[in-house]
Image 1 (cartoon, rainbow, N blue to C red):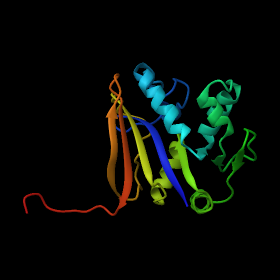
Image 2: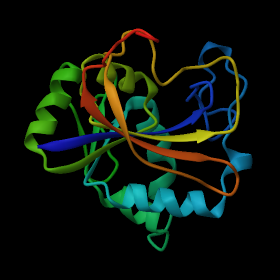
Image 3: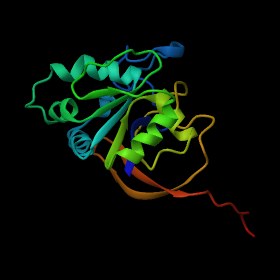
Length: 203
């Protein structure tokens, strides 16, 4: 049984849209693309190498797949991130793509939630989701996420696509690991533990 891990760059107010550049995703008139760049330090780079390095498969939405496919195959294998991303099995959830040509990629067939549920049953190890904001909403709505790795940048934007949108299935999480990089990026790993518990303050 595979473990589905969502690893996401996010602002303090929960925005995950276009972290890497101004033209990455302007949907909805978003004008704040590239907000992570000033805070990406060496320690964060090492953390990302380790995070991606432990993946046994990647799960991507169409937009993230196209961004990655336009960049990583052109990087040399001397880059450990490129070497890993180019070789690891990649599964793409898309209603519009007819085929995928990045090395070791496969297009998921049918309903995305059903396809991912099957994928989790068929695979062992860690299935990581990178980017893919629309796909993540589907995964959260259908309670398919086992672990969330938040990479929280000290920025507030006030607008943009958010990680936890309407329709997210309520779940209790356990903070399994937490640390901060020199540039102030908080690395927080949460594991799903079940249903939320409720109470009344002071009772």
